[in-house]
Amino acid sequence: MSFLKRITRSNFYVKLTNWEYWPFGILQFPVIIYYGWLSLRSRSLLFFTASNPGIVMGGMFGESKYDILRSIPDALKPKTIVIEKHSTRAEVMDTLTQNRYSLPVIFKPDLGERGFMVTRINNEDDIDDYLKKVRVRFLAQDLVDLPLEFGVFYQRKPSEDKGRVTSIVMKEMLSVTGDGVSTLEQLILDKPRAKLQFERIRPMYNARLKQVLPAGEKLELVSIGNHALGTKFLNGNHLITEKLSASFDAIAKNIEGFYFGRFDLRCASLDDLENGKVKIVELNGCGAEPAHIYDPDFRIIDAVGVLFRHWRAIFEIARENHQRGTPYTSLSEGKRYYRLFKSATR
Image (cartoon, rainbow, N blue to C red):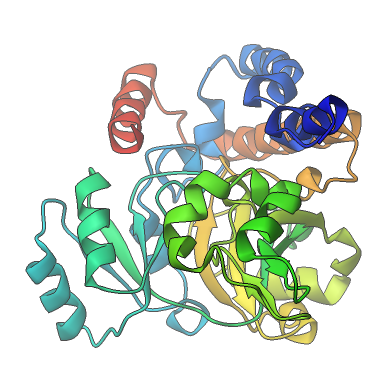
């Protein structure tokens, strides 16, 4: 392999030429300046906490995923239970059995963001591995095997009768397709998005790396729809219709104190998505992003523009709620939640 080819196939080059992999601060730097201006106008660094009065810190950090899920109608979410930290494998298995779970299930920390430690648990050994890493209480959630996964962003001002969907991200799971010649390892290393995840997924497929995948056979490498795990985020805003917005407006209005955030969900078809026939695996408040901006074809300048509008909406919703009596969280209380959040995600 030539020197130039080695360079263009390196992880560094892939990340350099695709801004979706750039450090968080590069994209956020101009947004932070705008956030400072909005803070001055609000006379509060934590003005965003009033955007969703029904969620701790408005959903920026420190909120309980379980508490948020409890506010969603049962028909729209998978069964979810809490498992306390420091549980043993036997205790976890006993809890799962009592609640009529069968493996595989999804484990996720009750505190966390950006898919931190969201893990598919296939067997008891996976439980052992998870218990060694998790620092806080966590959730066990039914595995939702519906074929389509989306993130649907919703917003509504308190003074408005109707809300609307402003962003849809379609999630394409990390996978490879066999050619009848290449080994699984070669297929992974030949696909830049998969190659970036090779060290992370190697332990899961170590016994199969030298196998040749039959021509046309598709293998989903990671079943968690998370950008950090290689999922491709695609711009799905063309799916936004008045009917879809009305469907999610009806869902959102059943959630007390919720005005702004993203529904992460799975569904069986686009028709079901439009009609709100979905399974919501997580609801994120103002800390969520309109993730369609991470589409590989989305320009970074356009992404910054979307984030400016995103923060403008947070500011306007929070200001209205504040005028209606919702206080901005104090700095001391905000620091307490931030320390709690950081202790869970280290």
